[in-house]
Length: 119
Image (cartoon, rainbow, N blue to C red; front, top):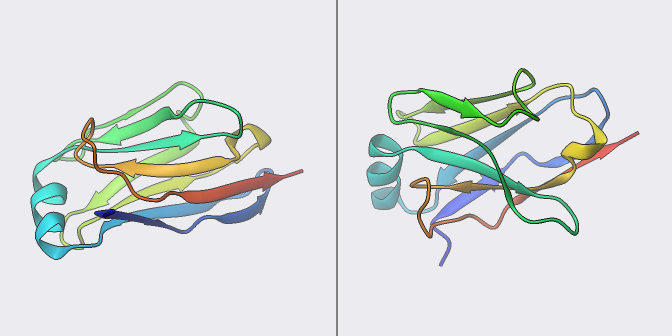
């Protein structure tokens, strides 16, 4: 049973923007996870392994991999038990299914949100 849910995926032209959201499907899980732990975003492109995009700590400290730094922004709103991934200046290589993982490094994942960048 998935405890997390991603939303906001879709089709966008290169250079465009999308914002993904990650929320917990269960309120008790949500309170425990989003208020006390780091949350990560991963992505998996067709034919490739799942890779880390970045993560945000309980207090909002963020880390990004080099390929998205300066274009993507991870933020969290603990009052809404939601973590966001704002993606700007999207390029074809950003096409992937995006997953949130909370707590970061745990076995809890959502089903993913498909982001397709077209030329």
